[in-house]
Image (cartoon, rainbow, N blue to C red; front, side, top):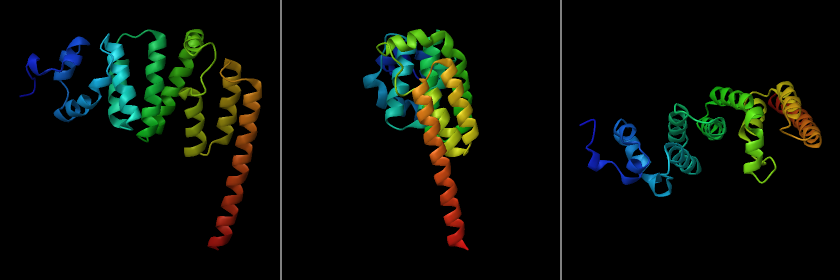
Length: 196
């Protein structure tokens, strides 16, 4: 039977107001979801979805985290909530090796950032957190997956203009990337010589 009776819907799901959504899940996803219900925030749909996605991420269950984040983003969210869920989605996409999707989400969050920056910084005690996925993970993908150092330099300049990094940090990261690129070049030369 595709739709289970309401009695079979877990209490946490009912409290969050997600009975219909739960009924449409596959049996496999219901079993997976059950693992994360103990830590679920049932105060709202957003609270439930974001807490379940966070648990799945910590469990390195990236495909499930992706599905929960994507479902959450279909809802009517404030800009800051959309930003926070997209941050989790970026991490989930990278874990699932969906790098183009991760980059698209980074762009989406960079577009949202000017409107949410004050609230985002305020939530972190008045300073930017060290981990900002649309900034850090964008560079990770561009350099680590695509070897796009020139694009990474442009991104660092963009982050500096947006106030997402300090001038000192931008300079440090630029220098680190230059060294990294040089080391990769040397590694390539020595590998080539060795293979010859």
